[in-house]
Amino acid sequence: MGAVVGTLTMQTRQRRPSRDKLDDDLELTMVCHRPEGLEQLEAQTNFSKQELQILYRGFKNECPSGVVNEETFKLIYAQFFPHGGRTKILFLYLPFPFFVADASTYAHYLFNAFDSTNNGSIKFEDFVMGLSTLLRGTLREKLEWTFHLYDINRDGYISKEEMTEIVRAIYDMMGKYTYPALKGDIPQQHVDSFFQKMDKNKDGVVTLDEFIIACQEDEIMMRSMQLFENVM
Image 1 (cartoon, one colour):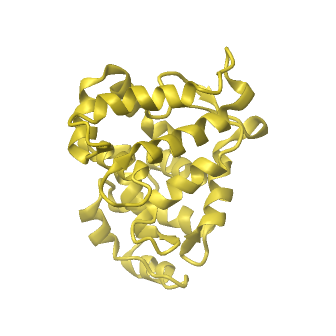
Image 2 (cartoon, rainbow, N blue to C red):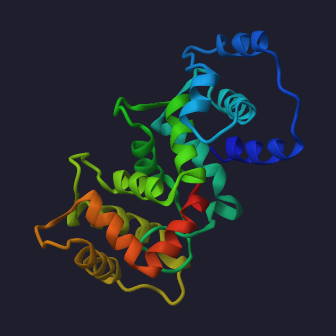
């Protein structure tokens, strides 16, 4: 989705004149899936109608069918990673920047977070709602979205196994590009440390409230959260 977000950033600065409603409707009918009206999406997100038009044109250009499956999402997301597939990003729970060698594993979890209906595809509405939260949502909204990213089985809790699965995948992507090189047990050490801080009642799972409170109380987590949008 890098091209879509980049287009939004560039064109909102230039303030291109908006089309009339007839042209917008004609554009929306040219794809297999027709998204909700722009007025409704404007009310549901933190984007203006003009910004939504820009986002939609970019989305349609990348995804002419109007929906994105996981494999297509991974290919599009890989556009974020120039210079041989590596880029410098900050990720929640990792208190330092790192270079990513392969974005596909992380893109899998990101896709699942955007796929709110769990039907194996992302519509424009799913994409723009998630993007609105990540880029312009309140801190709590961003934390809630990130919680759902970690709640892999969507049961309303984050288990240590779920946190370990995602964090280990991220460390695997880091590979040789960290300095100094990380030892094999570092991911588990980070999970143990953060999970202990979050699981206040020691019941073996982290609730949404526990997650939010722990993030707000921890300076490193808060700094990471403020830069979380860089992943997008």
